[in-house]
Amino acid sequence: MQLPREVVVGKETIESIAEISKRLGFTKSALLIAGSKTYEVAGKTVKEILEKEGMKIQTFLTEKALAKDVEAVEEKIVKLKPEIVFGVGGGTKIDVAKCSSSRQGIPFISIPTTASHDGIASPLSSIKGFSKPYSVMAQAPLAIIADTNIIMKAPWRLAINGCGDVISKITAVEDWKLAHKDKGEYYGEYAASLALMSTRLVMENADLIQPNSEEGLRILLEALISCGVAMSIAGSSRPCSGSEHMFSHALDTIRPCCAMHGEQCGLGTIMMSYLHGMDWRKVRDTLKKLGAPINATELGVTKEDVIKALEIAVSIRPERYTILNKQDLSRESCEKIAKATEVI
Ligand SMILES: [Zn+2]
Image (cartoon, rainbow, N blue to C red; front, side, top):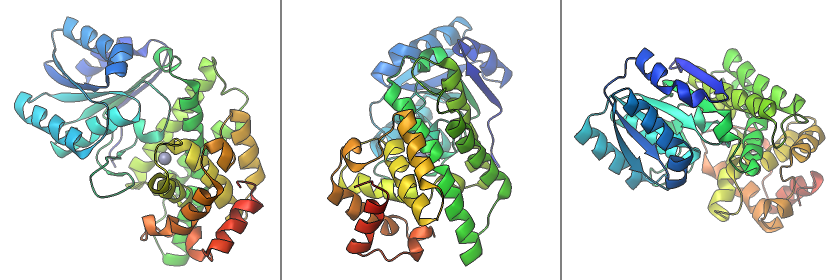
């Protein structure tokens, strides 16, 4: 189990970066990964604070999370030999920092600028060009510093996306239980409970998680971080990624760039909770309350895309046993599932 040692969430927590770095034993050098925008909103501040303390900070700006970006950062790590890597950004920059530092055997600190998915705290990274269309194990962040003043400034759609990712654990855990029952797969009650608690907190506080609510944003951030920790405890993405994630990954291959990960997972969760015989209407109504898309049109995809994604979802990750393995996944049957849940 690899867990973060320091997690700070709240207003102006970025100011504590030097103190945390020192406490963790990093006082000399660091490589900071950010995008051009995230450098402006947070990276620059991190650099200034640490340089004031006498640390040598090199910066690497990247816009995507491609294999070549990771390799370029790895080259920098080899050349500059920093003590630590800082990942400042939403998904992609943290993924690049996490993956490159892990491959080079040095730790990294996560400084999210959005609350868009659980990758801000998980030990998994999603890099295009490294063979798999889903996240693979890298390493957990040594610390997570989530400054709500900074994250509040990000577009609210990103937070809604994060809510979708948290709510999706309700079916991910159910799939995990099913794999345990039907296939004897290892099932970790503690990790599963932690993921489910995050879902429960976000669902129960849907009224509070609304634009301009710092309190709501903090609940979401803590839920996302707990999901990341659940994956660290489980040693895999199992507690946080099941059939609903496979649907989302399938949609990525059919129609990339239309919707965001958490939005797609949310839609997947409506359909998969229906298949599990759970209260899918509650899932749908909560997503609606949060402002998340609940059907194909709102997601910006076609009915045909949804049907096709259901049909091919299993093939995305054949080794991951889920409720989809128990379904007739003919075109007609997939259409029925999507229609029954009013997704199409
Ligand atoms: Zn996810």
